[in-house]
Structures are given as structure tokens and as C-alpha cells.
Length: 323
Image: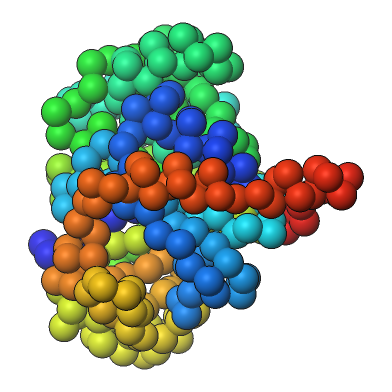
């Protein structure tokens, strides 16, 4: 599985302006590219919506070697309901008997959400007056617009990708580990049956996936996200065939997605045992598609300036729809 890479996590956002401020001014990420679409995506990248929407990729560096965020904004939707698939979890004390990776937070002692290393982000939050909660010594919780949780380790930002891991809730840890490791080929870095957590990934220098057992069934709400990986293009039909053979859910069969003026990519969308959406995309074309656009910031700012939907709803004394 050496050719597989962790790429991004998809967030649905209702307040695009405040969200852009959080990622740019607080986390210190850059806009890598921005695109506007007049109709829904064939692979439901923006969720089950057919109307106008936008995609903004933000991160600490290009997707070739960084894990980034994809912010999808549906013009007619003002808010989404969070479930327990990507939520806060009470942080536990550091276990001194556990061997912890260098330059990382304990893989078994952190909450659900996204964990990253950046003292600059902590400093930015304080300067902006953005609420911070110190959940354990040197680790702060910051809530992005929409309720998404980010955990900031107050250390100098890593030269490599500062984004350490994405933590998702599961209902049956062993079943999920079997899926992600046995079927999707991820390496198991850590596993703790007592704390019902496991840490997996495709490579030591990539963002990891942490699975954490939650009580009862996993509820994705309407804000459900999607995690994306790339693989060599010729592996995509094999992934599809394996999922069919194993009677696993395929949300979107292998399909080609066209972006005007850019590469056409092939993707397949899967669902794990708890319904977490997983996108696999052909690596060769995606590297071309995901090139950093130097005009990304301007395109986003222009789109937000031209978006009069909030003013229109306010004038009508109405609120945008809640998904």
C-alpha cells in the first residue's frame, strides 16, 4: 500500500466567511484552491444537494505532502447538525507507560476531531479572542464555526505536516480495525482494547486515522464528513471489486469527475461499517488537479463578496435552511 496517501477531510460549512477566518487567521492555513459550481457533484462531494456550491481547499502546504481540509459551502444551507462521528471527547491523563511517537500528542489520550501541532495557532487564537480550552497541559481545544473541534498542541509547528491525525467515532472497534486494516490495507500503529482506541495509517510521515469507540450507534447528523485518500489509478477497479466481493457498501461506484480546464479524476466512494464516507481517487490525475492555485485567496474573497445570500435572508427576516 506504499502508493496510498491521506489527502483531506471534507467539512460542510454554513458560515463561509467565519470559517475562512478560522482556518486562515487562527489555524494559519493557506487557501490552496477555490472552485465554484452551479450544480451538485456526481460523487456528492457537497452532500445530497443539487444547487450552487463551492469547494475551498485549505492547508499548511500542497496536498502532495500535507493533509488538508476541504470546505464545502452550499449556498442555500446555513447550518448542519453534528452527530457523534466527529465530536468532542473528554481528554484523559497521559499514560507514562505508553510509548508515544516523537513530536506528537498521545494517540490514546486525545479527543475526537483533528489534532495538529502549532504554537502559532494557539497564539493566533488568543490574539483574536477566539475561545480556547486547555484540555490537558499544552493542548488546547478550539471550536471552528459549525462546531467542529480542533486540538492544538502548543509546540513549534513541525517542518513536515503539522496535522497529526483525524479521530472518528466507531461502534465496534475490532470490526472497524478489520475493515480499515484488512480491506483498505492500513498499518496498525497502536491499539488499546482497554481504552477502545486504535491508530492507523498508510505511512509514518502521513496524517493518521484514529478510531475511538462511542456509546451506541454512530450518528452522522447532517454534517457528516468524508475522508479522502489517493492510490495509483489502476488500483481503483481492484478496490471496487474487493468491496463487491466482501459485500461492503459502495456509495458511488467508480466514476470520472471533470473539472473544466483541469485533469479528469476517477474516484470511488465507500462507507465503512459505521457509514463513515471514504473517497479513493486516482493519484496521477489528482496530483495535477490539486496543484496550488496562486489566485486561490482572491477567488475565495471574490466569491464571498459576491455572495448576497445572507443579506437577502436578513432582508426577508428569514434564516437559511438548516440541513
